[in-house]
Length: 279
Length: 295
Image 1 (spheres, each protein chain N blue to C red):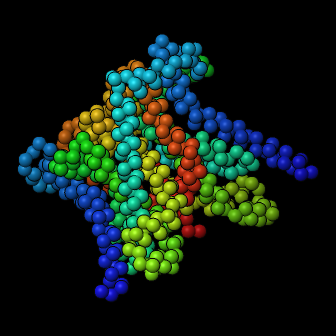
Image 2 (image 1 turned 90 degrees about the vertical axis):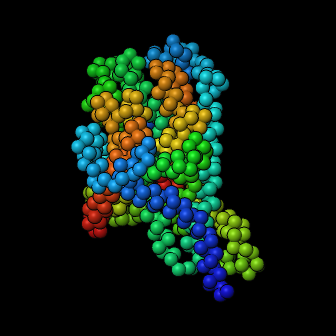
Image 3 (image 1 turned 90 degrees about the horizontal axis):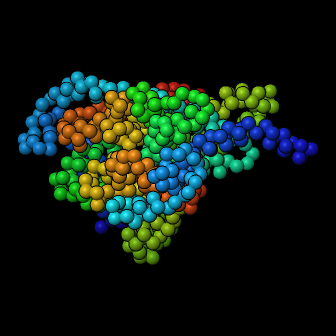
């Protein structure tokens, strides 16, 4: 009876499985096609074959090791930008979140509203004044120019404030009685308590900064300072019909994110579901 | 010093640097941009003069700007509802299957996590005319006429829009699915015991309970599509929003005005217009949905 019931449930779900699987093929196909194209040489790239007849890694050798491309350099730039901004966001966002959740002081509400209101200003509205700023300060073509707008995130402040308010006051007071300084308490007592939230914030911040395009495109004009997306756009625009190289470059730009994604898939899905986080 | 005063001082010390950041990097530049939109500001000009609404007058007399606005409207008006309807359907399907939700969800969200620049170039490669492009190759094999996609003034915008739908769908699906899982099973079971059919449960119970999430996603996706830039920059010829400006979004117009033509003040006034549109659309959506969500 029970087995019969289960079989019926599966039979009823069959059409859903068919639709979902077809859709999965559509979602995945561009990635498969990208990898397939990146394994073809110039004589095979125009053959519409999913499995290349003579697969080759020459394109990867060209993109990663040839002196005529700067992909390794751009890769490093992206890594530096994403790691530094993420470290800064983790520290400052949790510090601000903690202060707004756990301290009582005049003007707290106003400060919170002021920070949250900046969430409504899209990047597109700010790049022009930022550009005027980095020119005036002579920051053009520096890491700092690319990074400074992302050093603190208002969304992260909002998120951390929520998590910080769940920490019991007794724990903090106990640390104060032990004579710890306020900054010490924040770093050694409070931050470890919100480690899971910090992990989620770190993952999304890293992804967002790794993928960022508009501001890095404006802030860096020298190829040596390009981040990977800017470098890829530039390289592809100039590569013309060298699609085998373009697809290899795209695969290289995606690779670290696919790794991050596979390692942290649970946190990513949960992060989106719980908070509506955008990368 | 009193203990409460000491605590307040600590709080201000902790907040000092971040507050300077938000004032100098977010609010200040925003106000600066608004102010500059009323001047003749340019990077090469020494003196900046107040010129009133001149920039706005010139802007709204520019057919390219008007076209970029209507393109942006098309991205948002078609893009956001398509993403939301598709992902709602997918989430309902995912919710109905006994096993394998996780793996499907993982596959669907993959495009959302990967760099937009990279996926834009992958799609641009697939959209190439025959004999290069795989999509036309498949259409040809099925005996269907080849599409012109990015090379046609009428097909280019929908082609770029489709890529953004493909990117955003996984994000919305995850949020819808999370919403579906918060609906207690007892409610739909009770409705079924009362004789409601599956379709009635969906229409009268599930969908109304999903309204707040749908509203949240409408706002998020509406803003997302109004701001579309990276896809257009990377998928249109020479990154100019072609062919014939048919794909140029407002954000790309602003970028070109500022960083190709160096007409900073003109670009600032265009960003003020886009910002106003985003604000108005968001507020209207909140108003509209507030009435319908409170049942």
